[in-house]
Image (tube, rainbow, N blue to C red; front, side, top):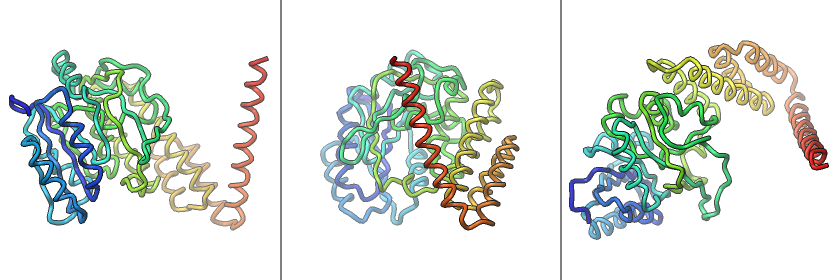
Length: 335
């Protein structure tokens, strides 16, 4: 049990995962940094979550719980947890994820070295529900301290999951907290707005494990909805004062690439309305040539019923050709 006033709040939103929740909670209680408080936010679970929470609260007085009378939605549950934070730092922990024991201690040590950092964190491992590890590309080209906006120069289009970050509470308050209007990508939005406005620190060690499950919220969200979130996030980031022009260009190009991919896949699959919406976003971002190509493809598919299966066949043939070319080139290099 902690002996001093808590310095970190672990916000754990949960819904109908009574069998997984104890693992998440115990990973917080196992931290080498002991001055923590755990706030469980039960989103009106219909399973045995209330009973499990009561058992956990009897074990440790650092645990508190807010149970909603009705399900208020994933995003609002996170917002509710953030609004209740009274400690200098906090982290979000989903009920099916867990933390490495030294995570909080490492984050606090980094905050002590960089008091103005917006967040401090580390790397995360991704696993499936059965525990098998998911191979993912490296999300950061380097670790250490990043100046405001600098992190965008060292990442691809994906960013370290929010589970592996500890936020400075007053920094998050200064940028307005979570923004529900961006939809399911609200967590990425928060991470990137902080990284654009404040220095941030990443350790090279794994600090958390994130579960990729079939029942996660993102698994049921359409790719077009994610594109809308990306557009909203990009537009906000580009308005942050002091962001360098090369960084703005990187963010806009990433949005264009995502919209181009969404448009191409929508044309291939015969999703005409989605293709036209992707074209609109391409035009807004200045990619008029790609927008015209997607629009023309959508028109072709809409006016020619045989087009979608033909396009799918061509896409498969192109993929096979590219794989064969890469194999041939690799063989030549070996020779």
